[in-house]
Amino acid sequence: MTRSLRKSLLLWLLLPTALALITFLPLAYHLVHRPAMEALDQALADASLALIPHLEVDELGEPRFVFPAAAEQVLRTDRVDAIYYLVLGPAGRFIAGDIGLPHEPPAEQEMHGDRVSFDAHFRNQRVRVVAIHRDISNSPFVFVTAETTRKRNQLAVDLAVALILPLIFFAGATGFTIWHGIRHALQPVEGIRRALHGMEHLAMQPLDTLSAPLEIRPLVSEFNAVLDRLEQAAEAQQRFVANAAHQLRTPLAGIRTQLELLLRSPDAADREARTRHCVGALERLGHLINQMLVLLSAEPGGRHAGLAEPIDVRDVIRECSPDWIRLAESRGLDLGFELDAARVTGDRLLLGEMIANLVVNALNYTPAPGEVTVRCRSAEGCSLIEVEDNGPGIPPAARQQVFERFFRLPDAGQPGSGLGLAIVREIAHGFQGEVEVLDPPGGRGALLRVTLPGGG
Image 1 (cartoon, rainbow, N blue to C red):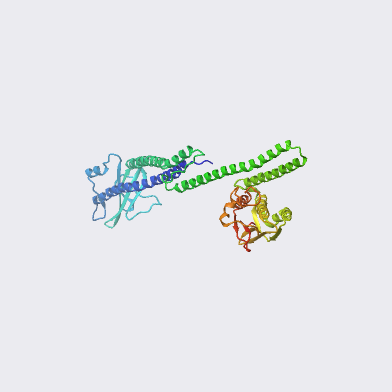
Image 2: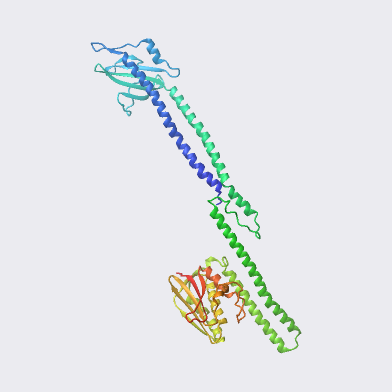
């Protein structure tokens, strides 16, 4: 699935912001609406308290409510809502006000002190009621005031609008800021894309690390490292192609020359010698081509990873040993084996090619009568493969160069292409292992050791 970094950033920034705003709106409305409603209730409670001084109780205990018309007009005056009041005596006896005005809260609502506020209906209208209970001359009285809810409803709408409009502006400003900020922050990435788009494969230049943001600077550095490795690989590939062309051109030219002379030679013995020379050149050419194919297979991506399997190194050596023994006998060499348990996981064919190159290389460069020993064993979770000979050895200064492609020691007495140990190193690296040249215990010759991760 293709993912856009810009869309992901917008989603992860705008979505939480939107959720926060949606959550904040009812909370802010509640925090503002509740004090406003309490202030209106307090005004109704003050009106109820204003009724108390107008109640008188005579010597016989009879209540008398003296409420001048002007005072009642002031109480009922409101430009928006209708105002009602009620005064009740002991046992709910009506004394003054609007008969039927609710004065008892719902059963689930409790009184707080001597005051209670609740919603009710009166004369087909929704009203807000505040009732205050007081004892006067040891008798209980109830003073009730109520008003319709038009003012409260309008206040609720005004509060909602007052909160929503700034939030809409804030949400728009926040969204624009986030979008513009992400666009501005991703400009260096776009600059890197343009730089890569204009880069030619033969003129790859490293990206400017200092101009990149700190967060992607490690990525740019790693990319520059990849470019450097690609450049080195391209140079190595060009050298390989040039060397391979030279190595192939020489035997082909020799074969062509011999064939031309063969056609003109009247001597049967000379023709036979030249024919054998061509056959030998073709064998060497075939060997060189086979080595190049093995080297190509040993490089990363050369063979499918699904070919990996658990391998017993001893079995691989035993399978190839008859050919090595015949070669050793033809050269007058003593070939020995010291095989202990050693297991690896990987490509069986490549492992066999690696060991074969080590052994054949030792047999080719060890003069008779000489000794070559092939060993394998396990040590500290690794599998070790060693080929030791008592030949001329490898000078310490050249022990890294011998693993380069087409490199041969100046005083090498045997013909070759210089690919054998290069193949060994590539295959060892493919097994996540290493190969090294050591001094043998006897001090003469060479000891090549391959260390591979142990397999199940």
